[in-house]
Amino acid sequence: MPQPPANNLFAGIPEEIQDEVIEVLLKTPGFHLERVISAGQATPPGQWYDQESHEWVVLLSGAAGLLFEGEVEVRVLRPGDYLLIPAHRRHRVAWTDPVQKTVWLALHYRDSAA
Amino acid sequence: MPQPPANNLFAGIPEEIQDEVIEVLLKTPGFHLERVISAGQATPPGQWYDQESHEWVVLLSGAAGLLFEGEVEVRVLRPGDYLLIPAHRRHRVAWTDPVQKTVWLALHYRDSAA
Image 1: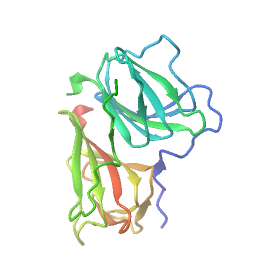
Image 2: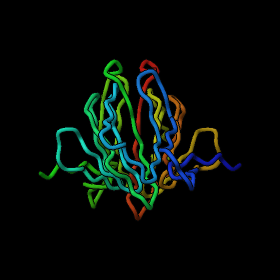
Image 3: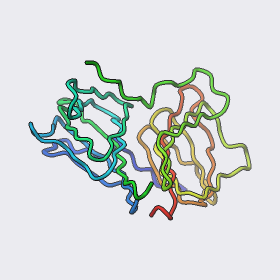
Image 4: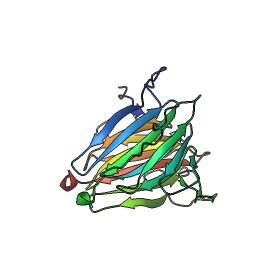
């Protein structure tokens, strides 16, 4: 009796991506887990993410540059690299891999869940 | 000014592993996130995991076979494969890759967080 295959984080990736593709994999009142696919997108110049939630994020394929406000140097993320972005820690995606798709797994959570 | 590198899920993997290596990456009262490294380990014959928490798990390297109680066929997991194991859904790890290390990311959470 064949079992239903598991879902795969690297499956179902569109060939052409205009904007980042965000898919919620799991959602509870305390957190939500997303797959994000980037294809060369970056945060528009001068814009910063300023999030209500904490974000634990891991890059699984491709590459990206992440800049935190007040820092000079962009942090380069390669597959397997993960970090925690505290709520309201302003940051921007400086660049993502223009050739290979960049797949992220992002866990957003609030202190109320903590 | 060089920035501290991000941590990497594939770094710091011991060459020799007797038992599975479990490392808590993030912990709140509502959930905890673990990296698990297997090197050929399996759940002892006749034993089942029966967990209080739900577990969302993704296999990131290596391979594994997961058997759920009441199912005949082992589900084979390859890199990127993920699934949700509801609390008290009895299951066992039938096998893990005997050659390459198997790296898992596991998110354990309770309904109280939901």
